[in-house]
Length: 247
Image (cartoon, rainbow, N blue to C red; front, side):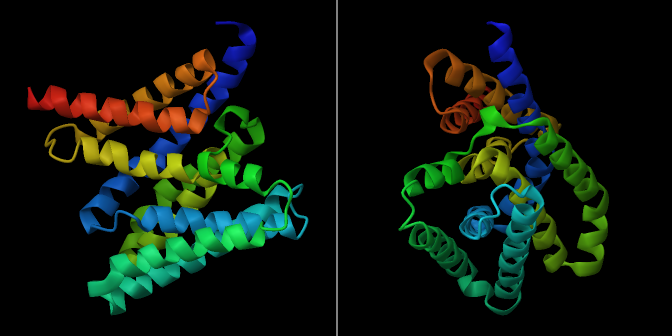
């Protein structure tokens, strides 16, 4: 492996570590609450915010893009918290509807853009191989802040605090990794270790890190889209963990 490949792979792997730091505990909570597709909905709503920012010519202004994406995700989080409180019996249907509305809204907004296909592809599978140091530092700061404030948010704001932390974490990671990889990072490690009693979180991190490492290597060796390769590699690591535990 040459130096150029390492210069690409190491920042991408660090991005994966930063994503997993917040997404594994959040994913376990999502699984516990039974709101599996909430992350997809919030990620897609954040993506819609990114599309809107691009249409207003803000693509070269990261702070503006981040602000719009965060605002969009927090609005989505507010709707999810309201649905949990007032419409618990139909919450999953509302989550699915929010996802479809955000996804189709992105398609409608990009329908007259000559590069719409590329924009949608980036939104879904991300560009994790091309993360820069500024993105990594910003994500590291946000991850640290979320880990420190999450217990306070849960204690004082209840479900709204959980969804707010969830929205902030997903917004940052969607811009690094795309909607599909965000979903995999939340659900695969949590699902693979669902019945593990001891050292569950440690095992979940092993699944996630193994997925990112092997997926990134596969993407470089076989010239594959990194996000999609990591999703499949992480799922493979999750299945291997499940089989080993069963034996």
